[in-house]
Picture 1 (cartoon, rainbow over the protein chains, first blue to last red):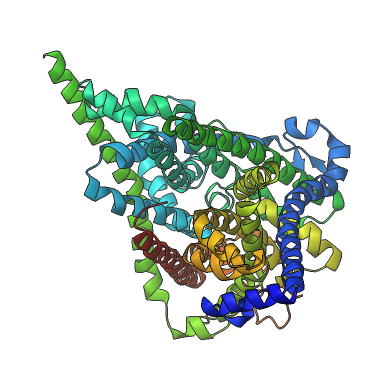
Picture 2 (spheres, rainbow over the protein chains, first blue to last red; picture 1 turned 180 degrees about the vertical axis):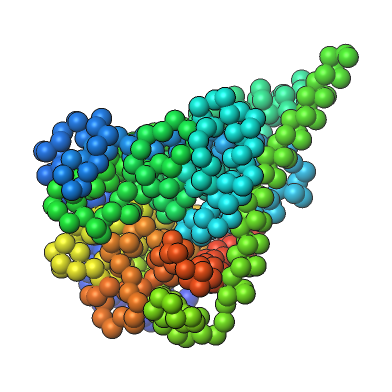
Length: 332
Length: 284
């Protein structure tokens, strides 16, 4: 015992390790136990928080779950005074605005990712990627502010009258142009989710092995043909994952949408009409919810949002990881 | 037209389309930043940083309480989220178990995609309901939960990049595991971990939705952490949807301050990793 301690000390001195670092036998053991306990506790806290979110949401939504059951999803009646709560207008508003946003964002986002990963000259890639990253850093409430004071007036006085003149025969483009409404929400959502789609798609494309491209180029394919045949096909499921990640963002986006969608619980076909989303009804009415049932109904909407976004994100992650895994297999 | 000409034309067309897509994606950034600087800078003055908001109809005033409130909330969130995230991330990177780390990574990525307003409901039922009042504490918890997965994942990734040979050398000198982590692993991964923290702070600094019914907002200075507290994004929101021109101006000024804070954090985060990658010579 004494011998080994002496040996330890002399080794440490020769290597000039500070004395505080030399392990006393017992101290090292206790330190390691403490360390293990601390890191495990941290991970445990994290897991408990995630499970706790789900459990608390279910617990707090119980009164509404018991009172309305499945009808909650399919009735369109939202009347806090009479305590009739049906979430259909919000579910519709969320789906419609997210769909509209994705229709704009997916081609732009995937196109930009293709440009950044495959087609653009090399010097252009870092600055453009950086600008797209900045877009992701802008807070939601700032998008909302811009939406209210810049985008909505622009839509009201230019875009919507134009659409009504050109495509007014479609029910989508009829009605009074307010500016705020489903169209504004869709455009804001598109701007907000595009950076996520670009970032993940680009990562997925960059994970495609270079041999794929070289093989196609060697066969005489043009850049675009290489991209289409050798890269996009290979990265298909990962790109789908990127799109789903964007969809998850669009479904849960709150502030910017609340500020531009008009907040009226109606189901209208026209894109000019105001709507209401699940996230915005929570944002607007949560602090006004006077009765327990009202609050529980709002929390049930939150629970619904949680379940849907978790499902979408889980699927997206698995898809993105599947490409990463496939890439590793090819490389090894 | 010959086939090769058609193929070349398609190639050129797709190139142009992709470049156009990138251009259209960047355009809103220019528009938003342009309007923020244009509308915000004219409304920004010293009073904005040092005065409380004035009552309706009275011109002037500022958002001093919202700025300190936001900083307080970020501090509260970081006090919980940063140590937990770093410890958890170290565990995930070093654990030899296969299932638990996989599950945690998965949960972290999924939690990262959960709408922040849902996290707000969580903090509300966990803290506001039992305490029977809105509080800075509840807002801090909500923001901390949002930070956690970001820090967890970046720490894990960066700790994974620390060469095993370094740790083995330290262990071979007889250091206990915890000293290896404290003196070798964490310092090596420091730049990356700092980046993760700054990315997380930039993200929560602009969060509004989870604060609506936790921190709630306050028109005065907060004195204690168990009472409602003002926050910059909340103040911007309530001023933006108000009907008063003077408040709209203040909202633009607030947005300019908020975005400056967020962008500076993002840029610093970027610079920190840039140094890291240069030292290593490779990316990832």
